[in-house]
Image (cartoon, rainbow, N blue to C red; front, side, top):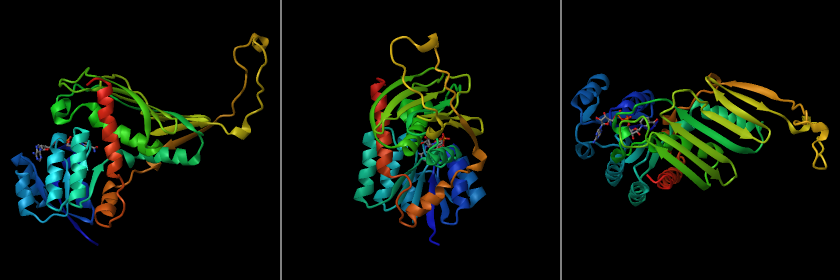
Length: 341
Ligand SMILES: NC(=O)c1ccc[n+]([C@@H]2O[C@H](COP(=O)([O-])OP(=O)(O)OC[C@H]3O[C@@H](n4cnc5c(N)ncnc54)[C@H](O)[C@@H]3O)[C@@H](O)[C@H]2O)c1
């Protein structure tokens, strides 16, 4: 089995808690080195994993023969670090959001093409249990044509880290928006024909948005309603998916699907005239609903590093094509502009 010599850049929340354990657990990757300006974090990595630690990214590139760099550094550093790696013949796996702007994204894609390297962005919400359940629901075609998708992420957070600041690529449109938009488009179809977006800064202590309301109409006609609300004190279901024949809703650890079958509906003629029959408001139709409950525990998420291995080591097509990430980043920029931010 080919082994990819890999370095992780940034030993923070996602670098330390996700990328390093997954790289270590995967036979196809060998973690050789890490970069972080904080000495105590480099020392922790040396002690725990026996890897080389660098304070200076350029020194890593000078000193190591690497196949892959995983970028888990703050967002505003992604472009420069990715371009430097690819210009030295190293492939890049970059955390989301890919960068701060479409111009930065395009610089990364240009470097990828110029240097003939591979570049993919970590979009883990494509492989979550929620995504797996939704794929199952869609594959069963219980709901019929999907006309509306509500994707919501809510909590109340007085954000005070670098993600609260515009200059570092923070803000929740960039941060969770990169997840939600990629996930919704991946599941329900890339191609947005029009949109509207509103941003607010409510509970955050920084200057970037922490409340996002975006409406998008997909090419297939579905209306997507994304709400990322970090100033919401109550829980709101993460998903409501409406089809012509029913609705799926996410509640706690399961999805509940309620739907009917076309062939089980009685004939319901249209009323003639302008006087509702019998002065009744409803038509007393009883819809023969079916209800299915799907537990998230029965739909385990996939290992994203298996997808990485397939792309970076086995030359399979990327699980997250960079063109799709570019479209997500283009839309995030357009949403921001539409919101006047
Ligand atoms: N895919 C996901 O689910 C997910 C989750 C969290 C974060 N992220 C993304 O990962 C990136 C990092 O976020 P985080 O929450 O882990 O941040 P963090 O603040 O927890 O950690 C950032 C780390 O980068 C280090 N760092 C700072 N400057 C650096 C430099 N010049 N070179 C190398 N390292 C440097 C810091 O010392 C720190 O250890 C961001 O782009 C963020 O949006 C993605």
